[in-house]
Length: 323
Ligand code: SAM
Ligand code: SF4
Image (cartoon, helix red, strand yellow):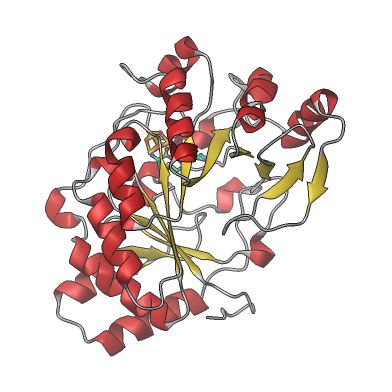
């Protein structure tokens, strides 16, 4: 559907849980009191919201969290979502820890693509950044190979941090060995992300150009997001940049978010949201649900204000909102 600023909104990011099996420094370093399970939307409630969203032209869904695969039944939910008439694409964002265990089920469910988050190839640094007890970057690389063997379209997401800025070339080299896109994400001032230094993505691009001088911008669209991509003859996958802060792309924003507790959130930067759980549990009609979503999407703000943080009203952690 078209929002008040003429943008076409066709993409919803759904957080199925606020729990996670890692503690990434910029996301939920100290953990957090998680919502009680009764507060989290049941899968049947999520499917009802998705059905209403499809009616409004939202046809692409990203399953996220917290860590989506820690929630029991996630592959079955994805299969059910894929079966909903009008759903064109369902993708997943995961830290990878439980992906090997669920990969077959996710492929059978018809998952269209997976984004795997990996911020460093250094085992020590990975442990420090994520508090991982046993999963390592090498495990993650093996997992990426398995995804490729299964024919699952796969991308790597790397948040740029002081700690990993010198690893950009090594991380990008994943796209030399495997047909996966490697995307560098600018740290957003959400939750703990606001307490850490931001790395300039243009500097990282310059480093990559030193290594692959033929790296050139390509205009192809490779997913639902705002990433801009670069290609090189030497790379099987593309290098992407998601620069939400320094290269604001709000004019083309196509998304809304649903938190695990059922708040429909039109913009990451602001705490305004529409409470769908209460509506569902009060027995609303399908028409009311569709109208409520329509109004919330229509009112989506023009732009974020990450560069004027005093105006930000969202103060929750990324894992609580759904990254
Ligand atoms: N647990 C899953 C994962 O790590 O992929 C899914 C949820 S996580 C919140 C989704 C993505 O958001 C991850 O790629 C993570 O690195 C990214 N992320 C979290 N906090 C961020 C921040 N402040 N700025 C930019 N990206 C962030
Ligand atoms: Fe968990 Fe993902 Fe947040 Fe890391 S980024 S703490 S894996 S939700």
